[in-house]
Image (cartoon, rainbow, N blue to C red; front, top):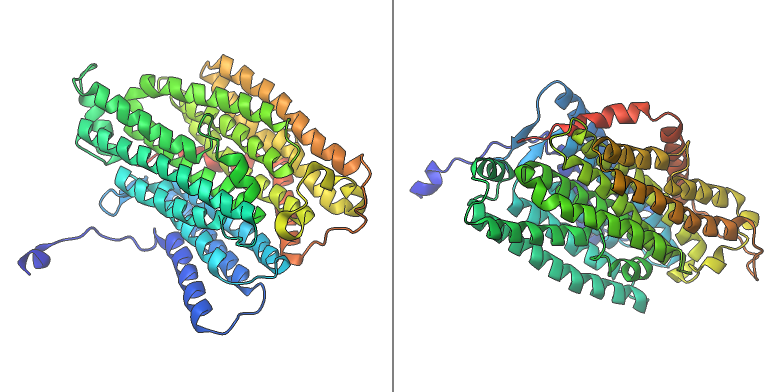
Length: 503
């Protein structure tokens, strides 16, 4: 009793946590309402989820404005960071929830199912992802990682009528369990070497140590295992083996959410840990990131062009995109360069733009694939331009953007990370990235040729475009083109993410 009376907990800045609370309230409403009330009208579960994500995005704008008038800080006993970096990552994840919930609603109608389960898992995964983005402590980061991962495992296996979905969930669960074990063991070794799990205190400890302390091997092993765990989540080569099978087997809206929100959370965590806690040891982990980036660029681009299933094509494409984002991480590791901050800003900008691109692309793939995601081969896209010209045009915009064509957001994203690599004198990796981009363009060209220049074989019926999915695709196309034509406003805003709390 005496200990409880004298215990003083940290202050809780409720408004700072309001984006998380908005998602949590939405998840509670869906769980309680879905279990205690009669069946809701079709589409209402998705609309409630989208409104929760939209509310969180609006609250993030207010927090962004508050941060512009003050300095970044840590909150809740230094467990979480409150800075532009965390707010931008939160916006990216909430955008993924917003768009994915709209497309999932139509997907469930098409599959003859409806219920709040998938949407609750979306919100739960988003909460875990946001905790990863803002985590200022390795233990908190692990909790966020597991919250995100467990939700994604169930989401991947959510279609119980398809064996491919069950297989995808099982593969992701088994391999994800291994990666989580590596990650947790890495945390234990880093704690053994530094006596801390807080990122700021780890940074202070490593900065004050001698060049070759006796526990250096322990620290390096911990950093290596930590990188293995995060490299698995971002699908970097050679830890990408789960990606093609899981992306192909999972329900298409779930695939888009995994490729966007999951990648955003993992990359943001990788950036924060590496440039904050491990800033003084960049010479140890920079070569690893360089190798991961090169392998991801080359393997993702080359293997993508050999596929015939569009979902597997886009899975390998996402591996290549992970390589491009790793360019930004590698550029951020050149702490002695004045342009190192550009690596952080360009990587976070890439994540936001890729989130919109990948969800828009997979939404169209899901519409073409139809019930059970059964028509996702390249031949199923033949004649799409004649059957649904508006849908084919939107798909063309997304594919051109992923290829990095000018006047699209993809060009802004790729130019940003390559420019950051060049300005930090990483010329070799920048050249490899440009060559990989050329190879990857052939992949997107194959899909466009199939949609516009090849005749359909017995596919006279046009794929229907439900209202919510059409709304998501329209919004994604508009954002892609607006950012590509007028990128200055976004680049000026994302430039502010270079100042991280606790550094």
